[in-house]
Figure 1 (cartoon, helix red, strand yellow):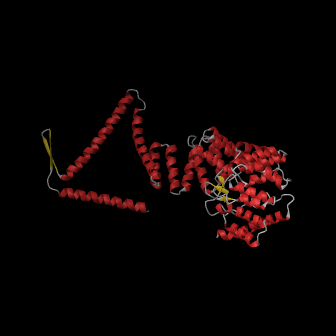
Figure 2 (figure 1 turned 90 degrees about the vertical axis):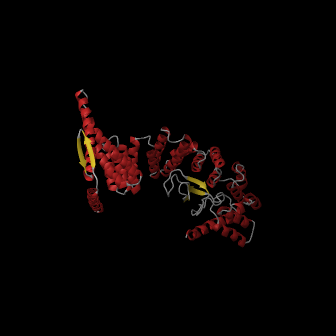
Figure 3 (figure 1 turned 30 degrees about the vertical axis):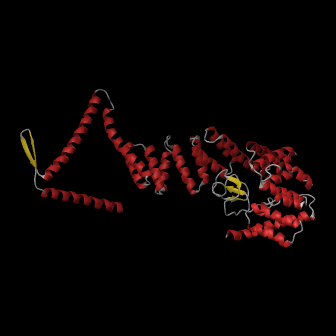
Length: 488
């Protein structure tokens, strides 16, 4: 409605301008004399302007007629397509001009203008594989999803543009949150163009979200095959998928296949902590403690982690405290200055009731890098040495407000996870979880097995050790109760 009104006003403005110009020319004095071949003609100002316009039009028509005559002569000389090319050339020129204008409008963010130019280009070129692309993207730009959907479906009819149509509809379904349909379309797009990197990434992400680990591993292999993924990254991500697949196999009750898959995952990426833990436990089930220790030692050398220590303890669950300290030296002599090593040594000595040695092991960690776990260990040491309850409560009070220490944090969105997962539960990114200290706003509580993992469930636990475990578990319980207020 507004555009129609603007066109009407523009028409009247042009007419008024022409009328004003004509009146102005008529009111001017003087004339123009032209002498040609002994004939003299005199023109007034208005007549002169009209004559110039007629001359320009005549020259334009003469050039067109000349071009047509040249095309006719070529046709007479045997060029059967000369005349058709003459007319087509004019249409193509206008069509490509409109197409160029449409691309410029699209790049400038003028969606409706781009759609208009694309429609004009289609009128002259009759090339929907070119114009429909502009129309679809322009329709998405202005929020006309229905129009974009129609155009993408039209692209499906042409074999040359089928991939573009499938990809366009897939992106629409992703935006709408219809991941099931998007996954089916991603598989179709991947079948049409297996080398397309964006399609590979979308398919891999959707397969991981749907826990289709086998399909995701095939997609990952295709990325390696087509050169869109470095070999070392492929090995790491294949290990992530393998360990995820192993967890599903365990849930199904197939322990033999789960062991094989877990061991394969650890072989692909020895430093992947969940893979190392699963592989070690599979070896333990086969009474191959030596292999389990080797796997855990290699992963600990890459990055110390409490789950690795807990799995290492499971290799010999019935050993006494002193034997455990001796056996754990395979881990503790590696990275002796790492906070995890210091806390592990402190826990081992608490279990052996050697509280002075435990205090020496933890050293200045509670002052330099205080965390809930290290402060809880310090409270256990104080309790074991017979300190007043006020001293023990003081350490536990500090633990409630201290940092939770390293956690599984998504590198993409910084979301914190209480346990490792192959995909981020917040942003859906694949293989982005790292064991590190969150930048700020920690909310995930460590599991109770992380707090003094070597004490819980150990055999021949003395009264003192039981009291220490009660202190640690009480701290965890109190922290979980207080945590919602912290979030507020």
